[in-house]
Image 1: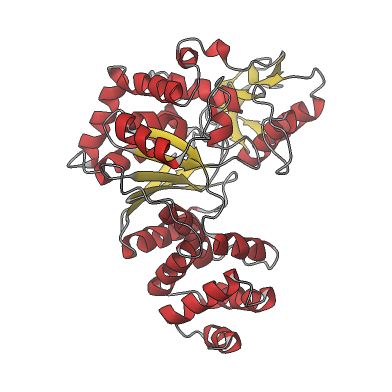
Image 2: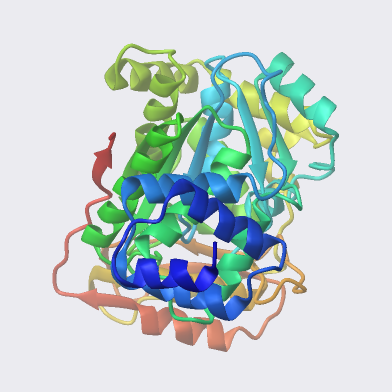
Length: 433
């Protein structure tokens, strides 16, 4: 096989065979096929698309380019959840103990975050003593005995995807549905899940800005998952404004605790039930999505979900007393209110810009080398559709420095108050096949 012939074949809109896709990914991973040829292929895919079979083959070729995680020693159906990213997205912190409280194994491999706030691991490390540096054997043992554990991402998972992603970033081919879908799904499949629930975001704070694009991506990923033998479902959810009220690591841990008590923000709670019921259904613990949601509500009401969170924290070296005493989480030195300048209704909170304001405080990383301040962040006191009076606080800034004028200016520039407005739709639909 010659790479130039395969580029030409895709350029002309023809289908690549499984063997040809395997040849490309293997050769590129080993450094035998140069960047410029894979760049040309990525552009051909961008314009010519791929069939469902090609997408599934590309995904599995990337899965097999590195190590895979074998979770077969863990009893039961392992269901993983993936979000395409957003601002104030605390769902994993709530869903992991919530679903585990129903006896469903949650074997979570998470990373550290670049961007507005830390990743799931950074957030959990706001809890004193909590750590994810555990052996594979300990990880499997914890999930079998307690149904929940989180471990750091393996370095050699899907190396082909890492190379291809970096290339797409500099060749204007990031926004290709087959390339995005196979990238996300390859990581989830390599991490050993039997079933996958996807939270595909749309809006200002999301990668997919329009609902139609988010639906197309969700359908592509669900089809890949089901075509390679992983039961897969997706929810399309709004990220035009931040999810919940908290943006920042320890602030989001407290919000997760409140939600597990049944006292969390309504939008975060609604999305957790929408994703959680799919996880419970795919794990075979409920005959319908409605029954699954009832079971989730029950473990919140009877305190079992909160108890599972305590147990999870203690098992990984953390201080479980933070569940009852969240003031033990890292606290910022300064609380600064951002008052509304006029009466009206909150008409817009631009999610990604508000997320950037939190990052400027130190809540997230601008580069991989950046240090995160786990105490800082923003608490929204109003959401889109809420009435507000002049002088009432829109946002509380949690900062470890007194001068945060650039953050205040950014908040004012990205929260719009109008005469009237309605809260946005939170869930635009679900994709099951």
